[in-house]
Image 1 (cartoon, rainbow, N blue to C red):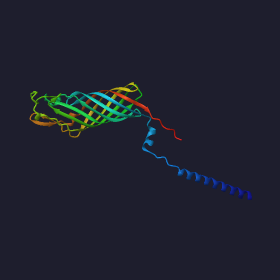
Image 2 (image 1 turned 90 degrees about the horizontal axis):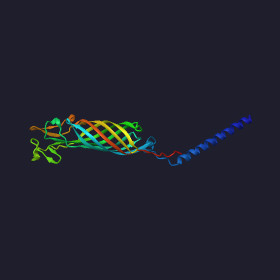
Image 3 (image 1 turned 60 degrees about the vertical axis):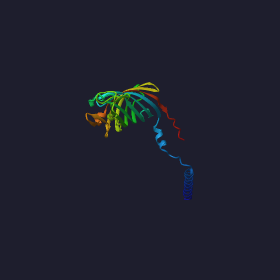
Image 4 (image 1 turned 30 degrees about the horizontal axis):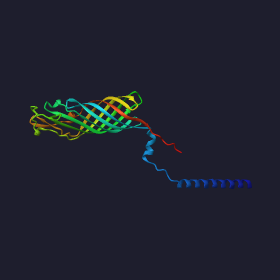
Length: 245
């Protein structure tokens, strides 16, 4: 009986000592400075590579029943070689909008805004990418071309400034597309593709129509574009993650 009582007391004492030691450890841990959590510390484990590139581009832009050559440029940041975020802009040469039935008129078209792009299987020699541009477009319809002045009716050099229609009000543009890319080198990719420009909102781009003034519609300013370009930059800079202690 005495042995049982002694064993019980010994067990109780040991349990008390263990509990006291744990409490001391907890107090010590609570006094240690807490590690600050940030948004980057939560996101960075999923980011394996980063990149950046610029892309000059030649375009063939469709609008108002005609096509015209255009030059474009984009600058992008790349995450994990797949998702890219950046800015892009383009501007066309002067061309004749055939749907307006007025050979004395010429048109210029511009577009700029934010660009998103997702690349499918970027490690493959040939792969696909899906760009999307959200931004503003600007167009001008006038009897001016290449710095020379033409009269709207007889195309003579004595251009009447009163007949100039240079409304250049911006309008909202959504432009999804599809590209086929080829990895030329580690720092260069060549692509060809197409996209469709969808114009929303009132454009207020006016032009002379006989004795009256008309306005281009959203459907006239929308259109199919073709492009070829070169991506140059660093696409696969590997992030170095510190080992956790």
